[in-house]
Length: 562
Ligand SMILES: CC(=O)N[C@H]1[C@@H](OP(=O)(O)O)O[C@H](CO)[C@@H](O)[C@@H]1O
Ligand SMILES: [Mg+2]
Image (tube, rainbow, N blue to C red; front, side, top):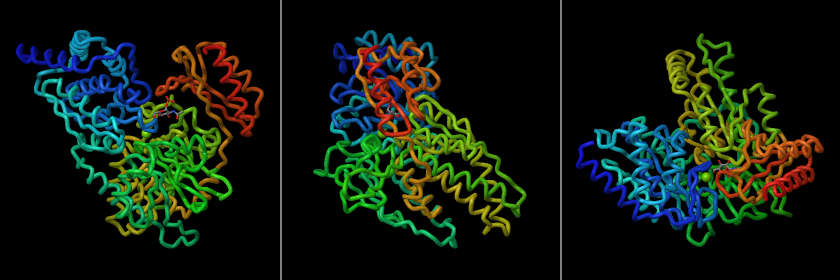
C-alpha cells in the first residue's frame, strides 16, 4: 500500500473506533449465529462487523460478502449481526476468533493494531486493486436503521470498500443475493421472487395428472411472527397459483409485537397456537415463520376446546423432503428406462442432537445416511455440502436442501437427453424435471422459510397428502427443553456432536445415571451460543418422564455450576 494510502487507512480506523467506543464491561462473542445482545448496545459490535466484512471481501478478491442485522426469533429489543460468506453461507469459522477479538478491542489503538496484524497474517491486499463489496440487509426491528448506519461506517473505514444497502429483507433473501451476485446471476429482490414463483409454478405443472384421491385444500394460514417474512409473503402471494394464503401476525402496524406469543420458535417450543389463531381455524393447515423468516414449522389445531396444536417441526419437513427426493431418484434410476442413463447421487441427511429420536429412527429405517453435527446452521450446512444432495434441518425449522454443482450439471444433461427423445413424457423425464425445479425453488445458500414453505406445499400436492398424513409419518417421542442460568456456561465442554459432556466429567456420569432410569431416555446439556444459559434436552417414552428427566438433570447442572 502506498504510504499516503496507508496513512489514510490508519486514520479511518482510528476515527471509526473512536466514534463507537466499547462500553465498559461489554463482552461480545460471535456465538452460534453472530453477535447478539440488547439492540441499544450493539453499535460497536456491528460497526466492527462492518470492518470485518469489508476485510473478508478484500481477502476474497472483491467477492461480495453479506451483513445481516437481525436477532431472529429473539425479543424485539434485541438485535444482532452476522456475516455471510461469498457462497451465501455463514462466515468461515476460521475468522470467528478474529471477529471476537475485534468486537472486544478495548480502544481505537488496540483495534488499529489488531487489524494491521490480522491483515499482515492473512495476507489481505489492502490498497491493492481489489475493492470490497458488502451487501447489507436488516429485519424490521426498531434498532435496525441505527445499526445499519454503524455497519456502513465500519465498512467505509476500509479504503476501497463499497457498501450496498439492500433494504429490509428476510435473512435468507440477503444470503441468496450474496450467493447469486457471486455466481454472476441476477440478484435483486424481484429476481428472488421471480425465481420462487416460477419454480413453484413448474413444480405444480409437473404434478401427476391421473392420481386421483385426496386434494389438498388451497387455504393456508401463515403466522408471520410480526416480522419481515409475512411482509414478503404478502408481496408474493398473489402470484402463487394454486394457493390461498392468509397471513396473520403480518407485521402490519397494530397487529402485534415481533416474536411475542407468535412465530416458529414459540409454536415449536410451546406447542400451542400463536396469537391471533382461534377455534375457527381448527382443521386448517397453518405454518409459522420466525422473525427473520429463516425458520419454518407447520401446525394444525385438532380441537376447539384448547389451543394445543399438532406440530410438524423441522425434522418432519426434512423427512418430507427426503421422501420426495428419494422417490424422484428411484424413478430416474430404477424405472426400466427408455434411456440407458442413471443419475448416481449420494444423498445425506444432516441433523443435530435436538432432532427427535423418532425422526432419526424413521430416516434410518428408510435406509438413508444420517449424520450429526453440533447445533448451528454453520455446521449443518457445511456437512450437507459433502453430499451430491444434502438435506439438513434443525428441529426448530431451519434447514434446506443443497445440490452439488456436479449433480446439477448431470441432472441438466440427463433432462436434455430425455427431452430430446420420445421419452420426454416418461415418468423418468418428469422426475428429472421435478428435481430440477426443486433445485431452483429451495434456497441453496441457507434455510429459507418462504422457499421451504413453497416446496412443502408442492410436495404435499404431489403426494396427495393432507396435513394429517404428513403429521402421522411417525410419532415424535415426548421431549422437554429447559434453560438453566449458571455462573459461567463456558465451563461446560461437550463432545460427540454435543451429545456428551466432557467437562465437568462428573456431570456426564450424573446424566447417564439419570437417563438409565427412563424407557427410551435420552438427555444432553450444552451451553447456548445465543443466550446466557445452559440448555437441557430430554426425551423419553412419556411426557411425564421426559419432563422429569429434564428436571433432574437441570437440577444437577444448577448444583454443580450454579
Ligand atoms: C436449541 C435451539 O433451538 N438452538 C438454536 C439457538 O442456538 P443456541 O446455541 O442453542 O442458543 O439459536 C441458533 C440460531 O438461531 C439456532 O441455530 C439453534 O438451533
Ligand atoms: Mg431466524
